[in-house]
Length: 242
Ligand code: APR
Image (cartoon, rainbow, N blue to C red; front, side, top):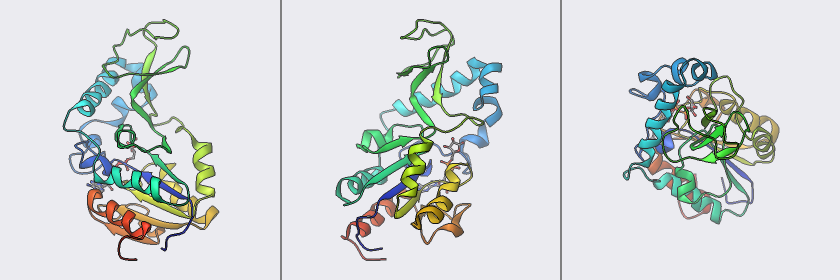
């Protein structure tokens, strides 16, 4: 893949943040091997037991605030790509952490929501939220108590920004997937969409082959902090051509 002005869409998943100290979901010891999705990540779970669901996300917010958790070389490489690539670069992340933001990524969509935000079920406003969300917390906008939920897309809910993402995929010449198992739709279907609708060159950067691996034209398997900077250098023309 030579340096061109093709637009790039990068889809990221939990694997890009693993080396920053954030757990993945489906790897050995991952979050969904310890806690059941039905207990903490569905609207029904929140209706049934809001305290349990809020405590789960409070714990993850605390983990994100740890001083050891910071953007890694893979997050930073994607910022370099955005700054130096002649075409547009959009990062669509499934991650609810803020590591792409902290690294300085500008054209970034959090399709599964953000851990550091809370949304009011009454007035629908979204607020920055750094601490715990208590079950009786008051919405800073409408002052209603007990109506705040994490600004997270749960299983059974529609991901955010789908129109923008679809448009970017339709216009992209290169689609890169980083650190995702390809187990969760609609994100898992983006590679096929980019191939069919844009004829995009598709690249998998992951620790191992993902579920949709055969749909990628190019594969680089290894840890994100190694393979993402190397691939970005190659794209920008500083490294060996693939
Ligand atoms: N470098 C690169 N890839 C890695 C690394 C690493 N250091 N560590 C793990 N991986 C890979 C794993 O091999 C796996 O394929 O990252 C992938 C992580 O997969 P999942 O745990 O399934 O995470 P993700 O694909 O982001 O999950 C999608 O599922 O539960 C939901 O909403 C949640 O956004 C999440 C979605």
